[in-house]
Length: 159
Image (tube, rainbow, N blue to C red; front, side, top):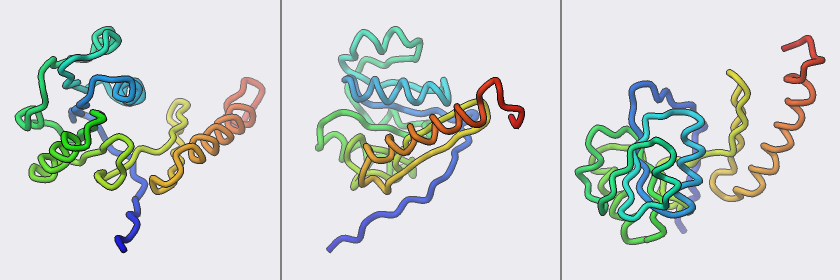
């Protein structure tokens, strides 16, 4: 039996580092919107992107995946909904020592993205070791409600 992966929660410094997002569908667009909360240094590689990708202002390379697009990237998100392509991207990233996250395939991931709440310089991340995303989101939402009501409201003097 293969042991369950365990993940170390960390916060990455993305200053001067470029993220590559490979994918053209709704799941990739959702990931892009999340990533844009933390950095604008993102390049999308999508052979046939949804129009919404082009409206984000993020550079979109409208070509098929090739490992040459990994050059100079520090983190890669694969959101292709194609197991064969996702596996190829993972292998190429590992060969170049680039961290990779494959959407909905924790067995192919070097890291997973937690459910995140952010307010100013306060960031709270809730993870489930990639086993229960919906529970992580529910817990994050409860924490967000608590923080908004107890710490970040205008009536609180303990900010």
